[in-house]
Length: 122
Image (tube, rainbow, N blue to C red; front, side, top):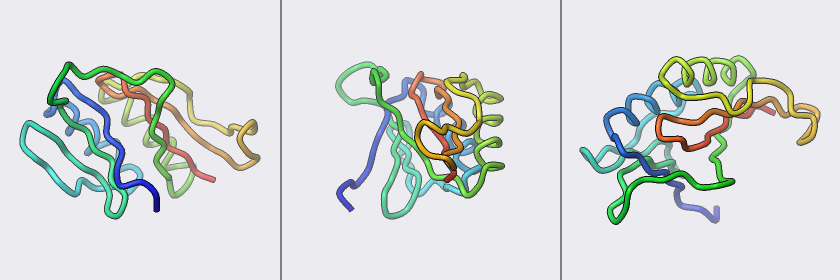
């Protein structure tokens, strides 16, 4: 494995943790660490972190996103539904993405801070 973790910034830890606890639970991903008012991690061996930047205001990365594996298409649909219900915004409704492969089924959303995330089932 070449990566240890990926992290995105937030300006509101409580809101971000509430969002990611619910949205990632649709993919059977649980919170593994929490540092109060600083950061939260999800996953086991490879972790996804959300946290308050130490030096500057949280901003989104242009052209970047994080993709999470989903166990099936229903989980992708639920990921999308819960994300929008909790204040996320649509960046690509659930569906097949044949430009990637015949079986690539995904949904793209922006979290409450504007970070782009994806759920994918293949």
